[in-house]
Length: 129
Image 1 (cartoon, rainbow, N blue to C red):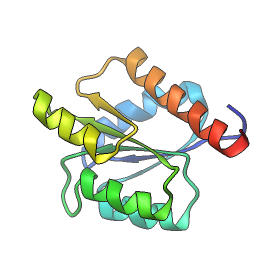
Image 2: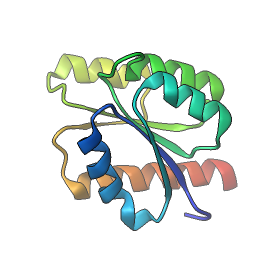
Image 3: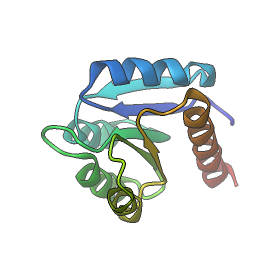
Image 4: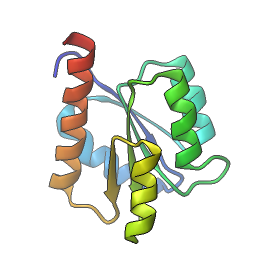
């Protein structure tokens, strides 16, 4: 991965943000966080971001609506859903909306890191490939 990556975490749960930031430390990326989808859309309109990690259930604007708006701003941005939904139907619905990956809570550090690393590499390939 070339250059410093910029990652936006979108989650209304303070402790989830702390945990995700800790898991992302080895990437040495610039990490930002906001509390809802509306703020994420605003942030992405005004800043370059390689990857967004977003919760699905949040106040103001949920992760699904956020994804739809983010794709209008930047169709190539990688967006990962993180969710506590465990039913196959709900997970399928989330995947079918167009997220690049879905990570279910609680997630293992290694699994989380592998998904994020793969998607950051993919964004590198789009930019430099």
